[in-house]
Amino acid sequence: MEWSFIILAAGESRRFGKVNKLDRDLEGLPVWMWSVDLAERLMKAGKIQETVLVVPKGQEEKFRDRVEGREGRWFVATGGKSRTESVIKGLKRARCERVLLHDAARPFASAGLCERVMEKVRRGIGAIPLIPVSDALKKIEDERPPRHIERDGLFATQTPQGFFREEILSLLSRRTKSCADEGQAWMEAGLELETVKGFSENFKITYPEDLDLAKKKAND
Image: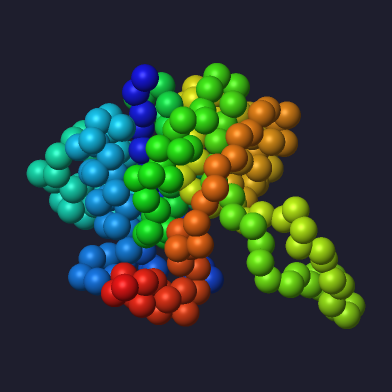
């Protein structure tokens, strides 16, 4: 069974500010290169067979140059206007039977987490990592006062997420509305989704303060 590792690095970083968060320095490397290092470790260990980088239009050569000479098979795909379009482009560039889809904005994903996800994937069965929500939750609607939401049974979703390539590609290609992640699209299509335990350090860099936290984590 062969696996493609797809790194999604084509986002616009709208919530981060005027700069691309993935190009920001994290212990001497741009944020996205941490996922490249993870992919290379997985390829060296024989866990995955290729890596596809989905990148912003016009930056393909920059990404190719940074992975040139690394061990394993590396490919670059041009991202789309939305997350779903970018995922589809990455899936079309990949050639393996199964895929791991990973956000480059999560620099601390581990090989162990990837393997736990991979173990759960079957025909018609996807797999995602979850962590329980620990904060008290409130929801604000139509400028009304905040409404409390019970956190029991609520989980936050992480990446990497695993699927059979042809199945998730077919599903996303037919989908007409946006989704927050591929797990959402999978569940809304009525397909079975397995879960594994994620971990708090596998957080997503979304705001500038998240990068500050990542720098502290990288120095631990």
